[in-house]
Length: 339
Ligand SMILES: *Cc1c(COP(=O)(O)O)cnc(C)c1O
Image (cartoon, rainbow, N blue to C red):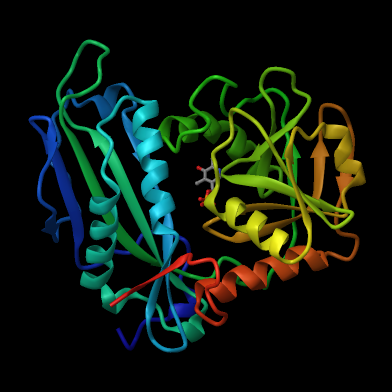
């Protein structure tokens, strides 16, 4: 691995040595199994293939200056996966098994955890799928939980830089009483057309409005939205957005830095009053927003005049990264050292 070019890794899949699996059969979860195969043997009538019984998670492991591997808020991912399972009627996986599986797969692939200096990390991808054969529309009786890892490069290769996003009023990602609050594959399938369209037009992501009234900010593709004004961190309250663990952490950090935090509906017009805006999620922590264009309404909202991130985005970003890499004390108890 000495030949690995850690700082030029992309956010793609790279084969590692092992993955960890756990089957749910006869009404219970079995023992963790270690596999070196990248394949899953699956029945052609499995519910994940036909009726979308699939949920996933995403989290990262960071190697500190001290050489130790740190996983960020893994208990929150375990809880969120349980909520996704409840949402699409899959057998929920107990938190202990989730954490044990993550620790195991990270230790088994220790040589793939990038060094501190690279700014890269080890991405952990847990997924849970319906395996039982079922032709009628019914939940499966059997499930498979798999965790694999892959090293990923620093998200901002050219530095921490704001990008433009777009409102496309003819697309919705999720309905108010639908599955938007769960991390399920179906939401991603539903967002691919709009996402590709935005990319073709040179935008980094789609900013969705609420599907019912088309009035309030929902979320930015696969990341939550937040904005800053008057020393306040403001993020949407909505029944169709995924509860981001990064957003939850940023809210706590903002509060600890003496800012006010508001979780409430954000009407689109309010965008013109924000000093800074950003998207947040595990992949980038914060993607500062340069500008939001509402093409159909012929409106544009600008958050950065000089092409640089605002001071609050900058501060929150560095603070959270410092905690993740162990550069600053973990006063919130968010980090778990894997040894
Ligand atoms: C995963 C995800 C996020 C970000 O959540 P984090 O826990 O911060 O990584 C935001 N929105 C959607 C739709 C997601 O799937």
